[in-house]
Amino acid sequence: MHKYFSEIWQPKLKKFKFSGLKLIDEVNALNPRAVLDVGCGYNEFKGKINNLIGIDPYNSHADIQIKIEDYNTTEKFDVILCLGSINFGTHDKIVKELQVCNNLLADGGKMFFRVNPGLEHEASESKFINFYPWNVYAITEIAKQLDLAVLDLRHDFNDRIYFVLAKI
Image (tube, rainbow, N blue to C red; front, side, top):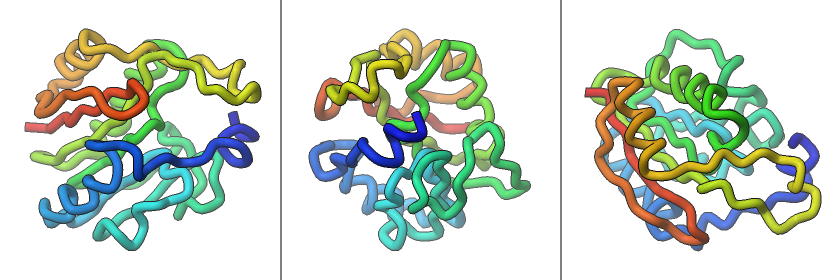
């Protein structure tokens, strides 16, 4: 995965209707004290979303190059972005990563997601990646399990699913 996401994959931020550039104004309108971009890739929101820290295990453009499971801080975030980053592996791995995010989320905070419904990428270098088959049922069940509210749920560009969870 390191080679694919550090050398081959390219962002398509401008193409996403709900989980792309529109998020800049939406997140900034929340006046967040702290924002965490999990799997930030090229860190495209840096300097556009206030108080943002981007983490990514594979991309050197991240503020901190680390996996979400290994990110250790006492800081709580008002907003967490998971735009294409929590998409890989088994159901248990997905829930574990989301639990870490939930633990980092401040009370009343929101998490914004873009997820892949299990579709392979076109590049041959990505064929070995196990894409989790996200769907509405998985989203609502995981939200219930983590005691999070589903605030929004829509289809976005390229068959991706956009959703927002909140800690109430």
